Image (tube, rainbow, N blue to C red):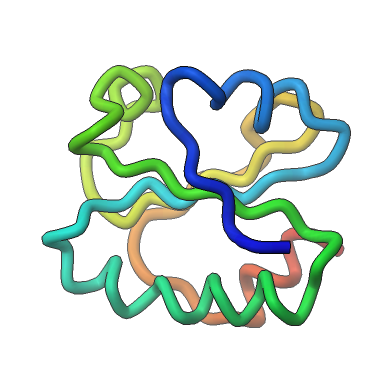
Length: 102
């Protein structure tokens, strides 16, 4: 599965109402560490088509960033059953991100 582009219109449906766990990357296009993390997330999505991964551009969706207290990018939030299961700031290794879904 490819990575979902999330925004204020589709976030609740795609993340909070999803029947599966979802990893959401809050990022910015100007952020260097976000650019480092992007290919890692693409690789995870390509290798694990059953995983749900989404990205929120904090400059386009400022209300979502505020709603989840995103102060730094990248911020990764793992949702299970519509609830926050884990919140991480900064680039994380691929293995740690894949392990969230296990």
